[in-house]
Image 1: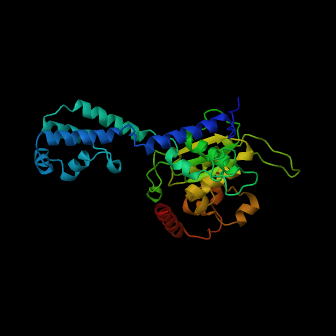
Image 2 (image 1 turned 30 degrees about the vertical axis):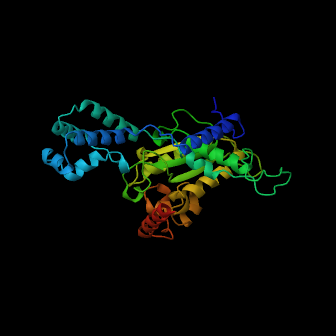
Image 3 (image 1 turned 45 degrees about the horizontal axis):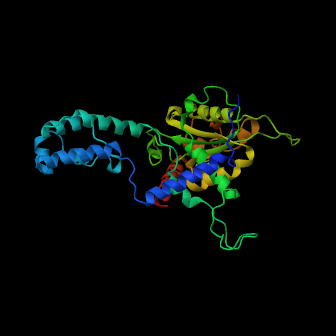
Length: 340
């Protein structure tokens, strides 16, 4: 059975808007959310140190061979994403004469939280992206300017984008487990160790390296082609990653959203503008497949130049940028997006 497509006009969108509004209200009123287990762990270790009347230097002296940096990081666990090792927690607890079992449980929860990819952008960031009614809109009641209209085209497109970003990421290598005869939007995320992509590599799957839309094709007579291109497209990308030498398809996750073609262009444009995916805006060519005489006459794509190995990239003229130049362009791109 085909997967249901996302309808931005449904009551679900109105519910999402209401939830976002309520969450923003709660945060503005100063209500605290549940602490990160890592933060609780660091706070508990600091409390134990103070209860013993020790300063950090005294604790370091009793926790040999742990370094001062290791102990300081444990006392400040959760800040900057730091999580101490189990050995560090046990040694500190032993020095402080405390039971390590409850703290190891907090450590386990913290490690589990960091392995579980969270959903897309936080709700408090989303409300800023809504489009409000402009001043003096035709037929608008006096004083209505700035009101939120959930049925404006821009807001409907934004809701589709958020639905995609909130979809649970799944491993590219296991997608699809069953044939997926749907069209829609998708985003690829990198989670591996490649040093070039370290700025965006994360199990949280927050910054995609590639965004695309699987649309039904059209023939020369203007007739709609076969539907259900999502599975075929993602299978092609997996095959491309299996061919190259320096990337592993196991290190990629995908979020996807079955949606009508009417709601593909706008949300895809928003994703490209918000995230500037490196394989869309700098290293193009992942989705290019040239064969025959045209393929032999055309130069390699930038993607094939940077990541050689695909058969149709062999035996062709070099791309307009060298591999060294592309690496530098990718680093500059990540530096610019980090500053934005």
